Length: 253
Image (cartoon, rainbow, N blue to C red; front, side):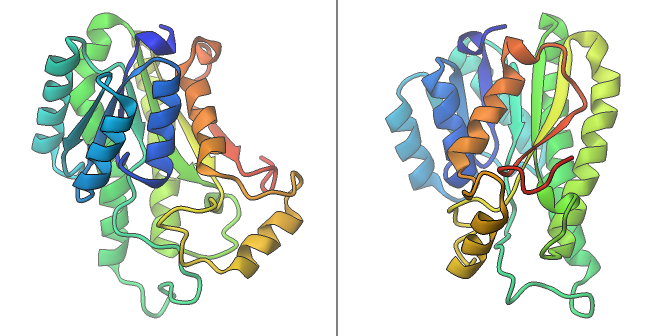
């Protein structure tokens, strides 16, 4: 299925990386569902920018009932089921190396909050979209990860652990869903310049990344968004269970 035939649901799409992914899909002609939780004004502004082939829907992705309703609303609006899911949302997290939780201050509740926002949320979206994907014999599920799993240069314990779990989740889902024409992959970025989540990062850190990265640049949300398009495109039809690191070559895997 070409991108311009797809209905793409992006969680946490009102700002930052999610908004860049929404714009990338819209640019290629896809119908786009902009999921948000708190940022209603930004979500509606983005939907207005992208036009009537987009729809902003509020849902807490940790709540399976709200996710199911969101998928039903999208199907009703576009008169076509969701074909493509991008699990992007980041729940209550800021990348602040100076004020991060350390081994003596981090709690199990911190881990659970990130695991629920990452793995549980991805499970909820898959449950909500799976029946329609099986019915049409096509599905694209793209999970957003991090290169910190391979190289925890800053040990964000709860966040990185949740993304490591999401990688295992990705590969297991890929194994089970491939026979239905559904691929499941991950795109893992480095620190992005600049999103709300990375706004607490100092210029010195960005400069260090730039100087030690083979491409001599800090990855942008737009850079990563274009790779998400690849996994949704016909060019990736034989690719599943993979984790593609998009960080300018900082981590080579």
